[in-house]
Each structure stands twice: as C-alpha cells, then as structure tokens.
Image (cartoon, rainbow, N blue to C red; front, side, top):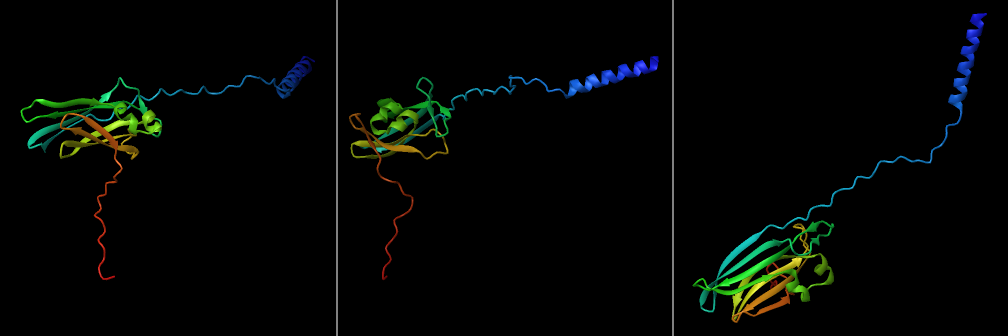
Length: 190
C-alpha cells in the first residue's frame, strides 16, 4: 500500500507540473531592446598646409609672390556634401620686392570673398586656395577658389584676385572656362 500511495503522489506531482507548464504565461509590458550605440562625432578634418613661391617679372623688376595656406581652427567649421566637418583655411599672400622688402602682405579668409559667393558656399564652403596666375600691366593676377573641402569634390566658385601696383586688391568671379583642348580647326574644302 505504501507503494501505491507513493505512485499516487508521484502521479499527482507530474499532473501538477503538466498543468503549470501548460498554463498561459503572464505577458510582460517590458520590451527589452538593445540600446543604440551613439557614435562619437567625427573630428573635423584638415586640408593640407600649402606654401608656394613664384619669381615674377613685373614693372621691370622681379618680385616674389608667396602664397601660404594654413588651417584656421578659430574660424567656424565647414562641411562637405556628406556632412563631414572640416576646418576652414586662411591664406597669406605676400609680394616681396627684389631687395626683400615687403610690397604687399594680407591674410585672406572665406569672408574676404563673401560678396562673390552664393548662400550655400558661404555656409558650407572653405577657402580652398589662391595661386599666382600672371602679371599684366599694373596688376598681378591670382586665382582663388572657395568651395567644398572634400578633395574628391569639384564643387567650388572660381575667383580672380588682382593686386595693383599701389597695393589695392580687386576681386571678381571668374566667368571664363579654362579649356585644355585647343579650339577645333575648321576643315577646309568641305
């Protein structure tokens, strides 16, 4: 009889376990989801520093035109087309006489060209570069550009910067399209 009683208790325990395991589990209102990982903002990139000097025959003498681009971490940051942050640049242009004395010295920023830029370039563009082009008459001509700081981008506004023999600066948009292709020659006898 003890054996039957032991089997009865075991059967009762198994039945109780089955009832409990088959019963509906309580639903929880708590949803566990992985916490999104915040990425640290990208540090602003820098364009390379650039320094170049040209010896320029002008006004019957030889002048040195120095152009030096450097990062301006004190200026507001700019962004490329993908939203990546960049430091803007400053560019110093110096013109030295043959005896080494300074004829012209000025630091240009993007703001120097504001009147010639569209709103988007003012907000997101960087001062990309200034390069000496040529001397003609009473003026030195330099090319300047303001646009996307991304090296792979071709988004920029070309400008012409002039320095007169009196040291006055002129700026205008460059509307000429440079073409490396010679003009097509007309075919004769067609």
